[in-house]
Structures are given as C-alpha cells and as structure tokens.
Image 1 (spheres, rainbow, N blue to C red):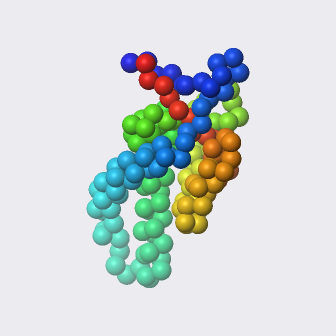
Image 2: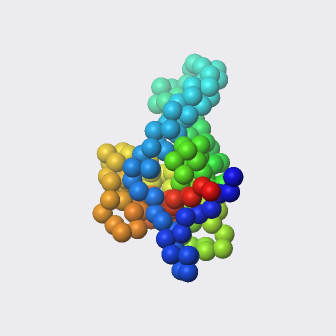
Image 3: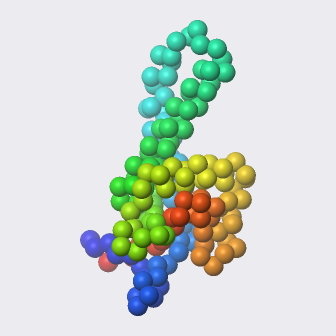
Length: 154
C-alpha cells in the first residue's frame, strides 16, 4: 500500500488542507484511545504519599495526566505525523516551514498540544476558526507552524 500526500497542484507542491469534519473524526477516535491509555497509566497514582497537601497532590496528578496525553500525541506527531485516528481519517501533520523535511519536531508538538488545550478551554473557538480562513488552519496550527493535510491512499 503506497501512501502519498494528495497535492492540490502538483507543479507548485501545494497540499490539500484537512477539513474540520475530518479533524473532529480523528479527535473522536484518538479520544477513545487516550481514555484507555489514561486508565492504564492512572494505576500507579494511588502510590503517591498520602501526607501531601491537597493542592500539591492535585497539581502532581494533573501534571501527570497532561504529560501522559502529551507523550501520546507528541510521539505520534514526531514519528510519522499521524496518530491512529489521523491514519483512520487519512490526514497527516506536517510543518509549514520546511518543504523538504515535513516531520514535526518535539518543540512544535509541545506548542501545538498546549495551544490545542487552550482552544478546547475556549469552547473550541480555536478549532472553529479553521472554518473562516482559506488555509483551514486552527489556532494551534498557526501557533506551532504546522498543518493537517489530506493523504491519498493508492
């Protein structure tokens, strides 16, 4: 099976942007996977000392959960540009800056992850903003200099 990036204009090396409905499809798929991973990763949390102050204990647990989520997304984004949900929906994450090297670096993955969380905290406004620009870029796409493109399967 040959995976190629679907080009809008082969002569100019312009790739088709990912529509919002495909993003949401991949998000649903990846959320189900992430719930399973978090459930398994949460098992050692009760081993935290019981004498920690409540705010510190909550901060440690929240930091642990956020780091688990980031490692899940960051690993896939930096190693192939696709989570399992993105593979199912035939989309790939690439950088906007390099035309030669389309792989995402950990710094860009971190910036994308943080801004995507911020987008969700703003009731998804960062995602919906992709409807109102020609490039179909959400807040986290612009902030991390990455974008989602459509992959054509032969």
